[in-house]
Length: 157
Image (tube, rainbow, N blue to C red; front, side):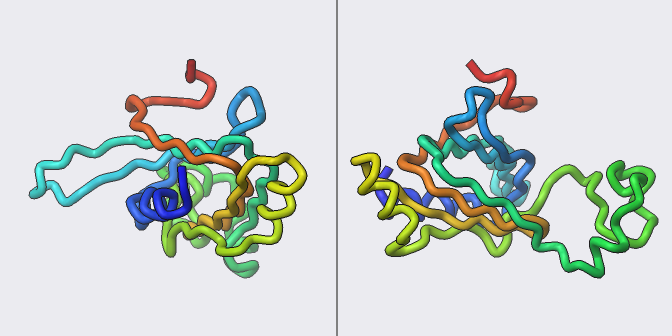
């Protein structure tokens, strides 16, 4: 997928729910599962999409949750929505992060250029920012496809 197509794909995921991200079970590619919804009045049904970052040579995940919020979010009751909803702190139990401010392709990435020179194929760098994580990936190709409700990486073909 070229850079313009990657940018369009990332724009489509903007402000939707990231429900999973991590390496595939074979540990080469990195996937981000996004639950996309629209205003019910549009008639567009909610759907899950798999963003598969192929040949992922670098994956860096950092928190965007401020340290003082982290300090207030250590209680294990916050990993369950029912027990954490009335507590102070970040409720991890919602089990999704809003892809906001979203994803962008890093222009003229020196990291991607170095991998391209070393391996001999094109590489790209993207930064995906949610309300809890900032994810930076260096990869060669992006594939986006709809997946079934209940998809998990360990249930993939």
